[in-house]
Amino acid sequence: MARAGEKKQSDRQESEFEERLVGINRVAKVVKGGRRFGFAALMVVGDGNGRVGTGHSKAKEVPDAIKKATQKAQHAMFRVPLRDGRTLHHDVYGRSGAGKVVLRAAPPGTGIIAGGPLRAIFEVLGVQDVVAKIVGSNNPYNMVNATLDALRKIQSPRMVANRRNKKVGSIVSGRTNKTEKTEESAE
Image (cartoon, rainbow, N blue to C red; front, side, top):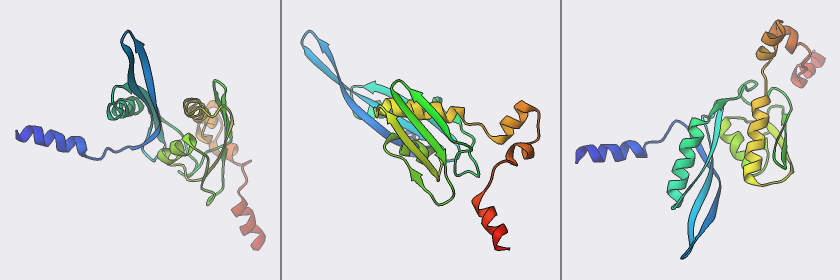
């Protein structure tokens, strides 16, 4: 009996990932005797340090659907390069079906300016400053997939420099920072 108790306690331990429930739907299967109801869950999982994944799953009960969706999301995680660990490297556009999103890098102190499913993704990803706009369909499934499409397109200066056989400094030199300009003008 001690083993069973140990297993239950290990299941209750907090995982190293942040989890957010984006949406839950009641779905029905029509059978001869009527309808069989189930639940579909959409989960977003991230480590708060540049890794994010999403998963959706169906089950007869809500907790089972959430658990299955969380496991799928953990297996589908991928790394997103972040600038200074707080924002995106550049503006990017993503789409899925009729859902489109525009993600823009933001200066420090801006916060997460995004709604619904996008906010959940940025919170678990570890992004602190970003501006996002939903264009078209606001279906949560399309929004999550469009955001992940956009995040997969992000490239760090190191990735661009490697592809062009250049140094990172030559790629980043065109980038201007408002805080650097104000410090130079103050001197």
